Image (cartoon, rainbow, N blue to C red; front, side, top):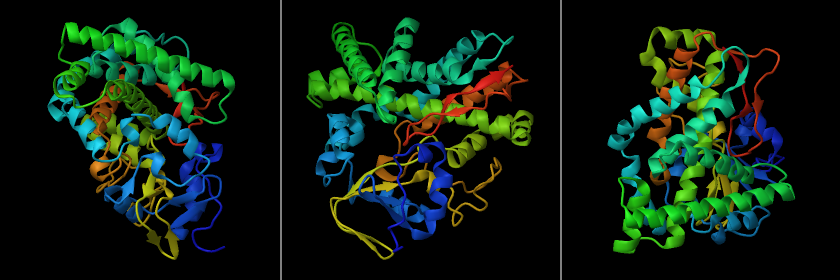
Length: 397
């Protein structure tokens, strides 16, 4: 088989379940063609790092050549920041950067701690419980909702339900009922934000909604559609990957009791532990780009206007950069993982995700020092090909 033509597809249940194992046999090919998605998957750390840091690649699916996935992406793109290219991307990102600045994230620590404590206090330690539905998901949704400006518990719980419905869009084999749920929840969420926008016009607050409303009304820096779309995008993007990070961290430490013991004896190791989780079992497996000009990798020439998918999970397990990549080692040094991307599109919420995961894990094991995975019900992976986490983690306290 010629280089770049190995049979590998990322939009599969197998890749969603174990992207590292699926990609591993193909890494020597450097780049492989995905016959289902009609594009190329990048597998090596250095190639992926170069692409992520370059300005030669776009995100707007309307600029790509036709392929089976394009129609769905075009429908999802709209005015979403995720799919924007410059200069629009820079314009919108600049408006929300302050909310994710270090000072603001540090100011949120007490709020994150309060939410974590509240959620764990509701769990009955007498019986088994699902860590995902009881803790990881509601924690991540309520934190991002607080940052946006949604403070009431009742509204935050509505956000949990809406977010779970919108996440279905990233799964396999959507049913007609799933599609209806997605449309209904997207509409309800949009109407919620439209109402919140009018409230901020009448009574401005110190929150992101007010920031965007002011930018729209005073400066014309974004359209009304972009305003609503940005808020919806932040809810989903700020929830899914962070919830998965918290879940993955809990499972990784529970399955490596020696590493957990190190964290317990020295809490100062927790940030390094979270970084190793991001590398070893990161919440985002693959991202997409569109070539603005031809790209040559090895013997493969990829035409301009083609889909390419940098496989972050593969890069994070590349032995050329990460010695013994299959080992979970919180003492690992020079942990140059790509789980938050790199370059101009580095994840805006990276610091918030790190802080949230550190607080979540410290509080979890402080609350339940005897926490264990249920031996009869192993954790279930969810089936979202680009996200990597669990749909259920049954624990006993």
